[in-house]
Length: 167
Length: 360
Image (cartoon, rainbow over all chains, first blue to last red; front, side, top):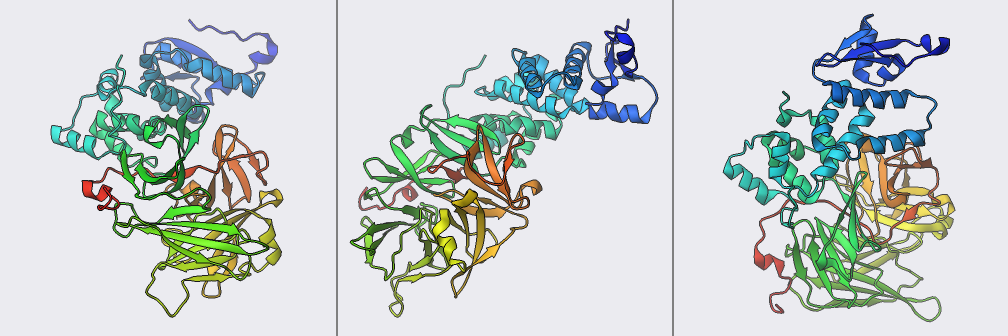
């Protein structure tokens, strides 16, 4: 169940933690990677337990976050390589995937990844209609028609009614 | 399952910081909790640096370190003279002038032209206000060392310039820093940091309208070294201020004007204020975010990121990344950029959008 890619006596000395997703998959992560997440770092400082259960992150999302943490914890990689990894990391990902990724990074408090993902999400949200955002996020419109009309009227730049593409 | 309407505020703010104009408007419209975040966001009414990006034929707007491209057909073949209250004063290449509010797409045409060559053209009230007037200042070097100083004023509701011509007793070459209106007087500086005041009211016959004070800088040799001039007022402060950037290492010097002696008194810091400086509009505010206090934002770039000068460290720093330097060599400076603050859509009365009813 637990897989490891650690080999040799030197790396074997490195401490590892096991992180379990909400759907039960477990991931072995080096401690140096785990502590890049402020929340994981806190948990590790508080308890001896090497098994951390995350009740609101699914395995697909967790796998992505761990890939990110491991890359950023790798001292052998230059900052430039890490930066281009970050670019690659978010490019081509669906909005649906990014949604859960940004939540996970927020829960785990991985600031730099959260920033990268939020930026990518904003890029996708550009030129979209409000109906698109509500649908993609599954948000109910809780405005009264009067309140919505008032905001449509008041907010700056509201005049700009270029044709928005809605996909 | 997560309720997306209740995303953490920090996260929503992060997304919001990358959205602008129409996209920010859409964000506010999604639901009430998102609107609450947008309405209290630091991005909402914080100044943007706006300039024309020639190769892209678009206007580029910087807010913090996010940039956005917009196109305004109204602003084609025109350059920015001045900007205040969310309005731009523009001069077309044919020398006609107009006001434009890019946030609300409103335009006010001015009835007369102003030829190119004026050092500064500025205004001090919203152009919809009857108090509004436009002032152009021009200096023509005459034979020898003399300079002819021309100050022309166009008042709201008038269709012709009131032109005033002076011959200062000493050479007074007007700096490009926009003048400041302070207590009914127009303050502007020459390239050596000397200050002239022009009384906007014609009624006061006992005093000359134009008064020039020389030797305003205590260290007189400093005057020869100034490269960039910025005059401004700070919200909540009574005095007039100046920032002079020197040739030598682009050193930044800040001053407060002592009146009535008209001397520049050096200042080291501005506490919880932040300055936004450019040739066409300069102002100081209380910093909305604490970490932005005691900083000067210039229209300067390091690569793709804007640069500010920290009065705490005495250095230029990039907003994004880890650039810092005690001089600004190698930084790109934009002369025709302006700071502009997004303003909410006011209730416009159409008649306010007319400068001079007689002409239209």
